[in-house]
Length: 411
Ligand SMILES: Nc1ncnc2c1ncn2[C@@H]1O[C@H](COP(=O)(O)OP(=O)(O)OP(=O)(O)O)[C@@H](O)[C@H]1O
Ligand SMILES: [Mg+2]
Image (cartoon, rainbow, N blue to C red; front, top):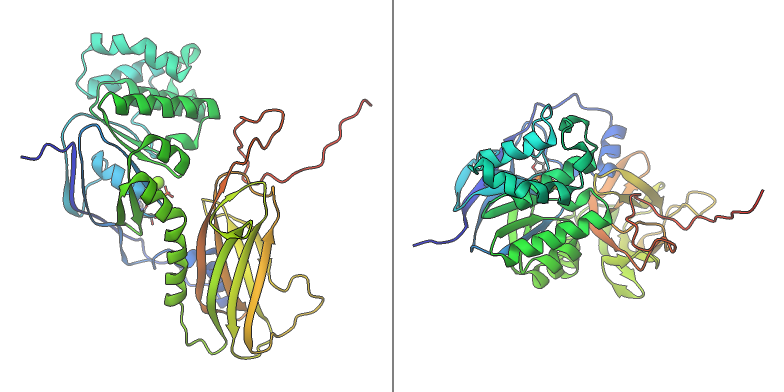
């Protein structure tokens, strides 16, 4: 007999992508390459967001789901919450499911906070009296007392999320699916969410928690699932899985990407890429120290316009910084054939504590990308003490957090 809370067997989800738009110029294609658009599958193809995923979770387990952007985390939770149907396999769930997913929370925009709480409870099959017993707790947790009779469409996104989390975390469900609840909300609320999820875990609820905040995943979960390009790459103790994702995993990822890059490009070949801080290879870096990106490559032919560049992108793949190996030279030089090492140093106190992507690429200026689409590494910037010395616990909302010179004087 199977008494697991969640059993997932060969679960897969295929999306059919829309027809392609017109193709642009070579320059557009290069720009797309540089933006990282190459990571997206070609339009018109079938695309597996989740492939052959199997695992089972015992009642009372608190499990983190981690992985890069687009690795299938939200898709997995949507399948478990039955918001979308699997293409292959099945997910068996034992118990009532409360969920807080990326896409909406099931709230009805025209209804007030109060009405939505009752509706949510009713959907779970709770009786009115049961919901009433939880109501005060929910409203207090969400801190929306003043707005509880206002339609939720007028809520700020923070208020909406707080109420959605409070409902998911206080109604009677055996299983809780939480997707990126911590992405919005201030530090204080994040702390309460983590506290509440911890309580639920100790009270025997089964929790599946998707987050990019590895610190939170480590403190909350005992086990983690690591998704990579839709496949379950690792399933095990949280420390081992997060370490694989951050450190070893990324180093292996870089080696793989280099191995996959065309080695027969007549002009250029990647040899190695390392991200370092304080002399140590790591992709989990502190905000208050510089980060070095060390690129080793072989130039095979003297070509005018050959350049190596690094893009720094945020989690939404917005380009924040693009920097070229030759930007300090007065005039373009064609590097001689041979082995080269370029070291780029990102200054301390540039990045805010959150996740970024580094994409390293080589191109022949205005002509083509060389040696494939480049190498992508995730950079997890960790907080190092308070960035704001007067308010060390203050959450940091900005993507960049450079040390800005301030002077205030009586005028
Ligand atoms: N409705 C859809 N149609 C087509 N593709 C989709 C759809 N929903 C998701 N995808 C694709 O499936 C892949 C997995 O998406 P998913 O949202 O599960 O990733 P994720 O791991 O949650 O990423 P993130 O960390 O950015 O939230 C992505 O490449 C995404 O673009
Ligand atoms: Mg997601």
